[in-house]
Length: 62
Image (cartoon, rainbow, N blue to C red; front, side):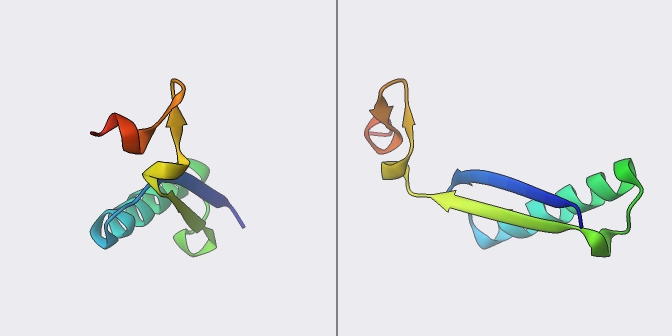
């Protein structure tokens, strides 16, 4: 059971669907396992929960 995990800020449903589809297709082609074997986990974080360069992303966007 291959697992692909992406951690990112909030994503739209359309973005999630595209990521799952394209990650699965690419990994299946590269590894040679059937698409049905792959699990894709998308972990979303609020911008208040992500810090870069010593400040919250929610503050950088202002």
